[in-house]
Length: 229
Image (cartoon, rainbow, N blue to C red; front, top):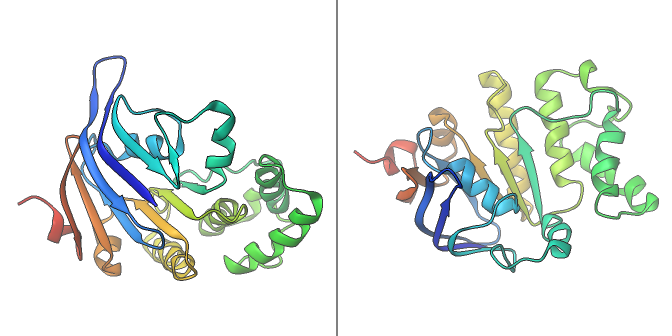
């Protein structure tokens, strides 16, 4: 479960990016986080992944308090969250298998666990048989599927996708979002940051709308249904 209670974040340059935000995302939910540029979306992602700490209020992520978490607890917390990036962030000189294996080794997985887990995850994301390919041998949609697989490979309870379709055409974007919906149906919490209204409207999920560091809408339905009028 993720819970923000009066969360605040002010950067060293004085920018107040998050202004007393409160919301809860229960285990197994699928939530879109939307809003204009500068609304606080990226800051919230950084708060959830432990990249930054709140300057006020509370941020709880899967049982960890992000304002009081100790450095030695961060790897354990990060095992509970898989992150998908807009720009894929795959290592170009490594095969698909190696890209996933590196993510597993980073959290202490054994060689046996790696050998068992990677084929399963690649099949789940529709990339069975691609383990020996290099990223530049794959299409953009396939590279993003590898990114999804990497986020899933350590069996996290939560997936955070930061503009996961930003570099894809509409057809591939729909494929990736449908894949995330399937992953959610298996029990994984999914949080998607996006500016693509069409995708949000297509899936009819919970939408949290941010503006100027505040929550200004929170409802199930369309982008327009929660956007301030």
